[in-house]
Amino acid sequence: MSTVDDYERRRSTGTADRGDVVALIGAGAAALAVTWLVFTRLAPFGGVIGFLAIAWVVFLVLYGLLTSFEENALTVRDRLARVLVCSLAFVALAGLIVIVGYPLVRGITALRHLNFFTEDMATAGPLDPLTQGGILHAVVGTLEQIAIALAIVVPLGVTCAVFLNEARGTFARLVRTVTDAMTALPSIIAGLFVYAALILALGLERSGLAAGCAISVMMLPIVIRAADVVLRMVPGSLREASLALGAGQLRTVWHVVLPTARSGLTTAVLLGTARGIGETSPVLITAGFTAYLNTDPTSGPMISLPLATFSLVTSPEEAMKARGFGAAAVLMLLVLVLFVLARVLGGRPAGELSRGQRARRERASVSDRERFIARINERNGENQ
Image (cartoon, rainbow, N blue to C red; front, side, top):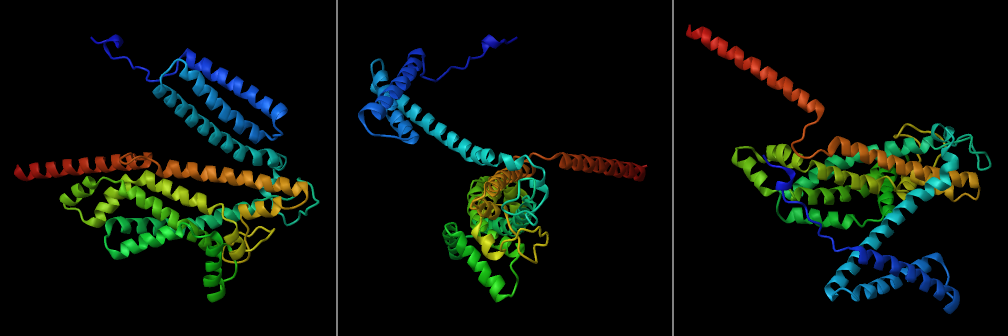
């Protein structure tokens, strides 16, 4: 009988020890002291960002110097690279915290009122308190516009990505080149294109439908390129095995390629959604601005959360600015909810079935078993 001691114990591959920790603490304290001396006594420097930047450079120099007293050059470079990577990761994390936390802090006075989520700005003016008015019209507009854009982008984007992977030739290369070029398309150009094509040429009025079409123009190349990369990662042996078993190309793509890349395709749709849900200028050009709630995407102006945020934070009144930062916080929360829903619905790995799919499979298995038993009994009856 085997015990825990019979198995090989996992070994730590890290190079940090007590001396390395002491060097980190000493270099950090010395860097802060030297930078404080430079800022207050030697040079007319100022600013928190400048202080932190200079302290970080001095810290790297002192840490490398302290490490070199006991370690060779290879270990010194390795530890400096580790500290550099960890520092950059910390800076990225701190930036993310600031980006998410600043709108929450500035908009908390508006977020505390229930009317902020249940009312529009039809009866609230710039001088009215936060107990009046809200962003319900902007939330509804954003949800309807992004729903229209997703209804256009998801089938077109995935189909185009499948075409780029399954078809070969000059036309496929041309489509890929055009898609790459469209990823850098300015959002104002997409809004002007939809404004000229749908509103001026076809006579449609400025509405949420036009805004959704403009947002889809921005989302489509992102989804195509990301889905194209994901589909390329599907092993060719899976396609070959399906074709060798007699399945056609359409059935291979539908039952083998797409289920295998389902999680990656979900990520592609999320990237496109993140690009489209924050667009402001296309919505302003194609849907206009309104302070009223409009639930009809085919008629009348319709505002979105990014546009509402832009218009509110530019107001000189503090109450309007608080509403603007609150709208930005709600927009971030809305994006988070959409991402979680997309991950739950489409982020399962290939071959993993949902609860409903497992139940349907069990019912189908029971039905097949009963059919087989009935067939066997029928044959036995004929033989007798």
